[in-house]
Amino acid sequence: MRQIFLSLIVVLALMGSAYAAEAKSLVIVYSRADENYNVGYIEKGNTMILAEMIAKKTGSELFEVKPAKAYPADYQKCIDLAKREQNQKARPAILEDKDISEYDTIFFGYPIWWGDIPMCMYTFIESHDWNGKTIYPFCTHEGSGSGRTDRTLKSNMKGATLNFAKEMRGTTAQNYREDAEKTVNKWLENWGF
Image: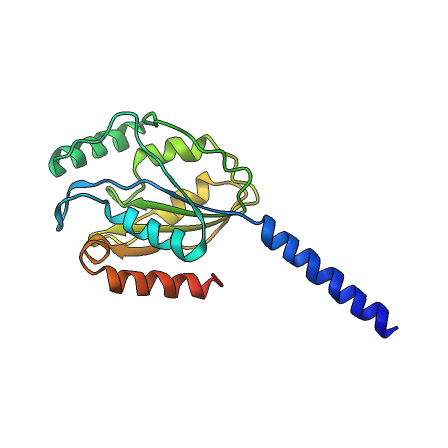
């Protein structure tokens, strides 16, 4: 009886190891460099900084969503266009897509624009089946927190297990990277990563 019990434990451990080896995670991010609120002209977007930290800590693959037509470099022109797109419920074309079917866990990152995700991220979301995925959203902002994005993602990622968004000020991500990384690592550790 003892030998059967030990054999069963070994089989279950091997099955768990095989699942862990097969489980894949992906960081999907849209982030904009150029002129940003409170940080001026930057070479790497605030949200991308967090995305790279998450990919490094979790060993996840990183995929950047890029609009086919880049947003203006000037901050005011960018937010004016972003507001028009939001009002029109636009779905801007993106340069390339990513097959997410093989990923179990997805970290989904975006800046907050007018209280919501950028419209190019809707383009990406609406072209995929999210059923069975576990989603960990994260975002950068300058005072609005995660806006209404928890509701936005819940209503657009049908069938996914969706966690509340981890939000961080863009100025923290951009100018206080050591603090930002500690915060990101603590968030990930709280979820078991």
